Length: 218
Image (cartoon, rainbow, N blue to C red):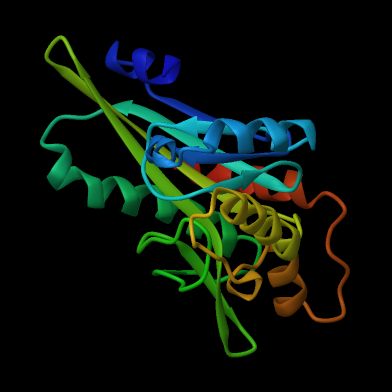
């Protein structure tokens, strides 16, 4: 929200950041009567639950997950700008991943957490899996408006562990939602697939952030 305030004042912000382990769910999850109880239990287990203003579903955070947040002023109707905002965000990430030798595409991936048509996905060995998810949130004040566009990129976190944590949360809520770990991949896994026989760089995080920074500068 602070970044959106700055964007409403005319500033453009780009932030690359990591977070502590936890799960982030949209405000719509308040519909579950046992949310507070479940959240307290997960917090005790080292996986605090936080709520966000954008839509979608639950997403994990923690080591091995790189976040890209862009906040900037926009003119026009959000309904007509949502697509271009997503296209710009995904284009930046796609260019960055291409710099690592990884080719990605847009599209929904059935079974992935927080699925949407503006996922970034990678096809390896005939299987297409989600590697990044995106979201956006708009705010208007004093005749101005700004957007916060966000992407979550799985760097070297374990897709099985991430999906399992999300599934534990959904099961505890009794939501009926279940995610397929095989629908998710990581930059590390994709690197190994496109660079057979080569070890994953020990500085993969640095390499990814450098590629994203380069994409942002153009």
